[in-house]
Amino acid sequence: MSTPEQVKSCCARAYSDDLVTTLLGESYHPGGLTLTRGLADGLGLTPGARVLDVASGLGTTGLLLADAYGARVHGVDYSPSNVELARAAADERGLAGSVRFEVGDAERLEVAGAAFDAVVCECALCTFPDKPAAAAEFARALCPGGRLGITDVTADTDRLPAELRGLDAWIACIADARPLEEYAAILQAAGLRMLRTERHDGAVGRMVDQIEARLRLLRMTAPDRLAAAGIDPDDLAPGVAVPVLDATRAAIADGVLGYCLLIAERPTEGAAR
Image (cartoon, rainbow, N blue to C red; front, side, top):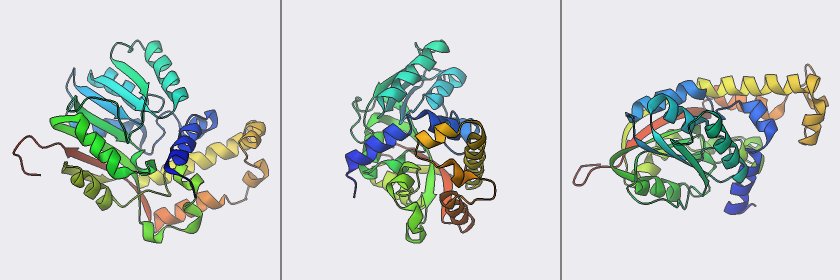
């Protein structure tokens, strides 16, 4: 069994790995920047809006919100190397004045209460060991009337196969994912009012196909990179099944795995939840 801190450290290391970036692409989540734009539109962002990007990764979401929506973004990520890369990306794109990135823990955010007009968290709540604590932090950070936007993996936990329950699967955003309704309940328990939910299950299948295609390409072009990551290139030979990816596809087809978008609001004083 792994402790919560070990899980968070393993996730941070994994998502700082160059191979992971190669496999997942710049946005690190199903639906890519198209879904991020849909999320941002649902938040009703206006120029100058103060946005907290939790689990900001390489800064892709935060940079988009600053560039396309004129937001002022504070990104927080558990991985110091991701934070450095995000800062470099902000400098390169001339957005350092609008976006800042810092190391931090989603379950213990070092931000003032009621300081943000919006909070975003993409494909990360599923990896947080203490989801209610993170949800409470999201709510605390929002000003009254502020909105939270989440995109995340969903899972029917009672039907999740054994091969999708280990630490590797947790890092891959599967092992501790929850049903959409449970995410909504966690957010409501934190004092937030649900405004909208959407299912985007097809986005997961497309990402799985992308990962497999890129793995098989690396087998031909850079087998040493796979071997260095503990992946046997022979396991990716033509016609050889990739058990975890096949199990993931089967779980998607059976409705066990999917992807969702949720938008919630911190009620203004006296408003009904």
